[in-house]
Length: 455
Image (cartoon, rainbow, N blue to C red; front, side, top):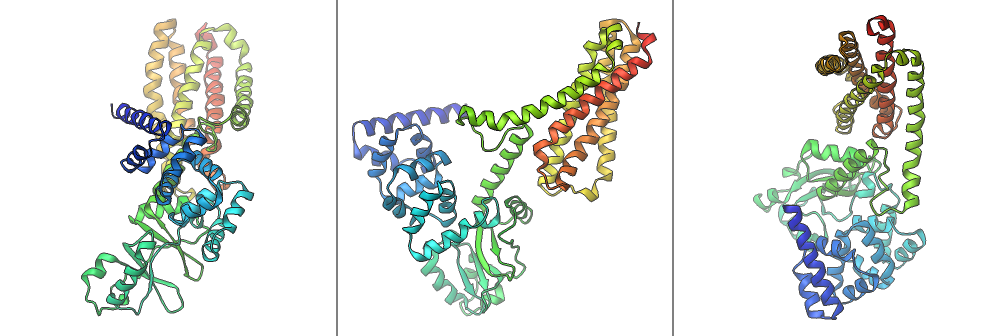
């Protein structure tokens, strides 16, 4: 119901804004924009032509267009940077935070990005170039330089005066970063604590000196875990000598969490994070086909396993009906374990050295779940084919394959992680292959051994 309401509002906004643009009703355009959140405007603007977007931006102040640009999806950001002239872009960037500027410039063609950076003032240009030097998925790539730092020997009164002067230009004001005389980060102090303290109190007396910080090369996923673990709303980025380089705010961390979650989900399905619903046909082929080819090769391995028991299957046709059940249940069980382990690795809850007890748990889980599902399957198979021995064989095969599924589902992502590979990328292929091959081999092997009871 809520999704339908949101879609209805989007349609109403689109129609109203499009009507105002078509009739060139500038008053109506400004009123609609004023009454609408920037993110909602960005969603609607994606459906407009370049000419309509240009006219809309022409009626709005730079600050409002900058808000829309910051909150828009990547596709609209790229379009805006392409159709607006460079001087207008420079004006917009004055109202945007440095980390968002870097994100947008990083998606632009190199030549266009260089032209924009050249037009910036020297101080801003130096900051942007430094931030662009960091990989986009690192702490340096998502940090902003808009923060408040003060020296530890200042009094609360002096620090508050400085905050009043530079606060409006910064992204974070609730946490003040305290530096020593050589500009090293030595602590933080909350604005609330400063307001409650005596004016003559020095910051060194009320600051928190146990600061959680990261270096600019730290992976953004590690930063997100620290923020979650210590319940932070901002985390500083420091050099090896504890010089304060920038900060990462919680809104950027939320974006990281969403991005990493989406990436893991897509990779579990063998899909690249670069692909979306609007990707071109050839881009989708390029990103999906390699994984399909790998899956095809592993399917041949499973087919080869089945071919080893061709004579057994030809003598007992019921085996052809039952064996996909064993392999399918193994694949499902392996995927369950894989999802839990990949998530635990991402959260830092499981590592290579602390897994013995957890492996045993997955093995016992495979025994219990295999026995339960195997019993149900065995009973149904008995009623279908009237052979109790086939029911017992599928019962035993189900237990064995679910144990294998739990074992591989747990260890494969850990092995890939130890090899510095993303455990979400190829784990599902290895696990599906293992459960198919072992499932077919165990089930058909049991059937071959007890063939005289199945005829």
